[in-house]
Amino acid sequence: MNKNIPKGVVPIFDFENDSKETITLGLECTPQEYVLNPGDKIQVFILEEDGNFPLNISYSIGYIQIYPNKSWGNWYVYKNGEDISSSYIRNN
Image 1: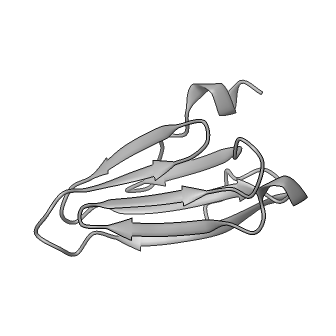
Image 2 (image 1 turned 180 degrees about the vertical axis):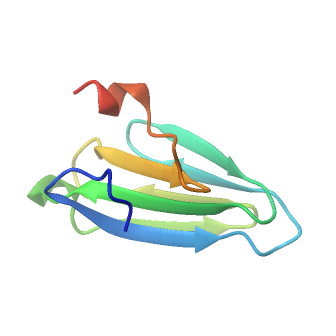
């Protein structure tokens, strides 16, 4: 787990795009989208609170979407080890 993750945040998705295609990751309900090129690795964390769980993860060709139960998400995202979380999340 990345050491910069605040207390009360849990890992929910750890993925490496080992395909030859670009994949888009959509995090709802903020919404946020991240493009994963071949070879990219992504780690997604979420605030551990009742409004976020259970999560729904869906996949269609070239697109992965993650929905929290009934909240906006509070996502923390690391792509290839770099924090690419939305500035909205980091400022709150």
